Image (cartoon, rainbow, N blue to C red):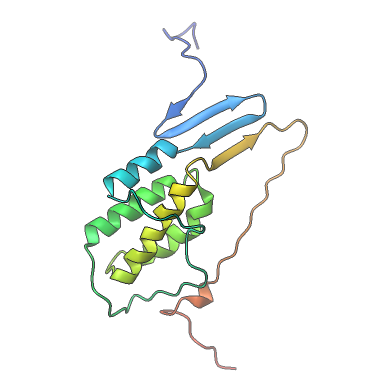
Length: 160
């Protein structure tokens, strides 16, 4: 490549599209602590009490809510910002996906659920992905704990 094009070696990648990259003998670590802090500042969410989980257990929200409506552009901005953070934070993926179902007509209870995620992120800013260097084998492990039957808008009892 250097023979065909005028290039220069800038060393190891350390920051790219808001992703902090750290490379060492154990592998590669990716995180977005700086980006997460920026979301909190722009969203006016600094000073919140910490949350230990990203979403309340067994939270059931409805699109047919009668609660007070909230500002849709602000709600959508929060969701979009959190979706960008999901790239290095798989621990918030389900919560962000679930609250994104209500972007068409967000209500106060939906916004309260959204605001819990940054409260969780504040306490876990150093979380991210770490890809360990594999010496001889590669093993991917994934977990899924989704309960779409708990969606109060689409869940229907099936005739028996």
